[in-house]
Length: 236
Image (cartoon, rainbow, N blue to C red; front, side, top):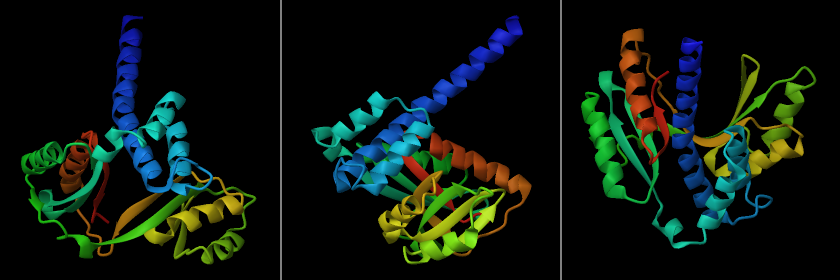
């Protein structure tokens, strides 16, 4: 009884810890999306998908509404999107996207994480040539779907590549086509599991299992930082 209670307590604490980190990140993204294209999800595809992501993460509706309202306030203007680039253990290249109200705090934290992981920060723009910016949409593949027809239906919206891995489809388009590309899925009646702009390595590198242990530790530390929105690497 005691052990079972302790396990449930630790499991609940782990969930709370995860939510305490992910909710502020989603909230910042929602605020920036509203500031960029308005508070109406029907005319703002990025906001519409972020709200969907918030629901999937069990983020309370009040938190979502607060993030939308925040876009009209002074706090919104203080949130800045900023990127950091660095080299991690074993030469892995890392691109970090942040949303912050304090760039001095962000750069200090990110620099410390790189240094403690045996890496270093790189000048802004140093890794631009290593990554292609893409819109990536994930959706579950069902028996009723005709993938050839779906592919044809998405080409006009900017589809560049469509692949299926373990029952999940990944559709790629240029990052500038985010709005029209995600809207095309809705027009086809396809429920999007996840959609986001991503940085895809154009020359991915292989690392050993031992090397990946250290690389993943760095990624985990970066993703745990409150200002970090996304982390991309050149890992194959």
